[in-house]
Length: 279
Image (cartoon, rainbow, N blue to C red; front, side):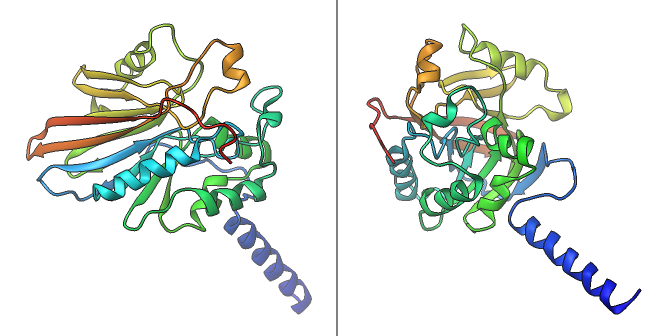
C-alpha cells in the first residue's frame, strides 16, 4: 500500500472512531438489548430510586420535579437510580405534530441539553435504558443518543435499548420499556408481560416504563411488578387520546437473605400539580 493510500485509510479510521464517540454508527449493527449487569449489594436492606419517561426537550417536561426527586434520594443516601427509558423526547417524528411540542430540535442540541440539565447529585449514579423516543434517533439517523449523553456524563450509565437485567446482590430486576398504548385496565399490560417471561428469565422485580401511569402488581406469578409514572405533564397528544399521566417516581427498600427477596417497602413520590413551561 502506498504512503498516500495508507494516510487516507488512517484518516478514514479516525473519522469513523470520532463518529462512534459522538454516538453515530457507520454500519448497521445490532443495538444492545437485555444485557445483564451485576451490582454487589449488602445483605442488609438497601434502597434504590426508580424513574421513567423524563422526556427532556418536551415543552411538557417536569424537570423541576425530577431534580426534587434526585435531591430526596440524595438525602436518603440512595446511590443508584434506575431509569426505564425515554430520557429525551426524541427527534420529533414519533407522531404528527410532535415537533411543535418540543423546545429542543436536533440531536446535537438534545445531547447538550441533557448533559447540562439532567439531575446530578453527588454519590448518585443513574442507570438508563432506551425507550421508543430515545430510539427514534437510531431508527432515523443511526444515532445512539443515550450513548452520546452517557459518554459526557460519568454518572449516567447506558445499559442498552428496551430492557436490561440487573442483579442487585442475589435479587433479579428486569428494567423494561414497553410498547403500544395504555390498556383499559392498568395492570393488563404488566400481567401479559409477566406471563410471557420464560421461567429462567423471571425476575424478582419488574420495573416497566412507557405507559406514564403508575401501578403496583404485587407477587403476580412470584414477580413484584411496578408500572412507572413519568416526568411529563399531559401533552396535546395525550389529551386527544383522553389520557392523563401520573407524575411520580419510586423508591424501593429491598430486604433479602441468601434465598432471595424477603420483603419490599415501596415509597411513591407524587407530584400532583404540573409546572407550566418548566424549561
